[in-house]
Amino acid sequence: MKTALFLLVVLAVPALAAPSAVRISGGKKAEDKLRRFVEQDERLKARLDEAVRREEYYLAEARESDLRDAVSDTHYGDNLRSGLEKSVGERRKDILSGLPGMRAAAAPACRDLVACPNPELALDVADAGQLFDSVRRLVRPWMILQQARGSAVELTPVDGPGDAALSVKVKGLDSQPLIINVSPRLLGGFKVWLERPLYLAALYGHERDAVLRSAR
Image (cartoon, rainbow, N blue to C red; front, side, top):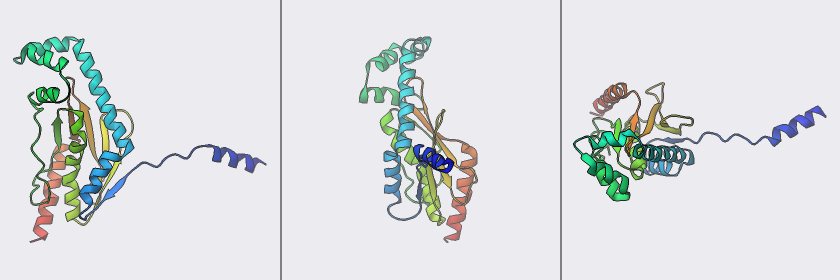
């Protein structure tokens, strides 16, 4: 009787969903697999949506706080303040892209290991529409490096509070996953960045050089 009751209790508890993850190795379809994961994974989309909501909150707070007055005292003047408050869509994107550190990055050059001497470790983007592409851009150099090494990356969305959005496990290189963060800016836009940038830059450069030397 006790055994039967125990089984009923176990069966009544919903199974916990396994964390969504994807392993990307070599092949012509790796880029498509990366794009599908970043744009369609529900947990990752939820993390990015949360960052967007936080950005909207910061903007609303800025309109009602002394921060707005502080911005008006800079050389951008009242035109920036009123422009941010009244603009939406492409107009707001244009205003934000003119702020220091918020200009759009150049088109990605990392299509193979030779053309990618340095990994992108942080990006400033003006609006939420660029978040998917920004996440892909931070993953892509490591995916290409791993392809050249005959290995793979494993992508898993990160749950919990804070800016961390995506864990990138670089198999055979680093015991700690690479963590991609998405941080909303107080005046709009986002910073998309990797933790431990100096270490990762050195790690990437060392492993890239080793792969290119072995290919000669």
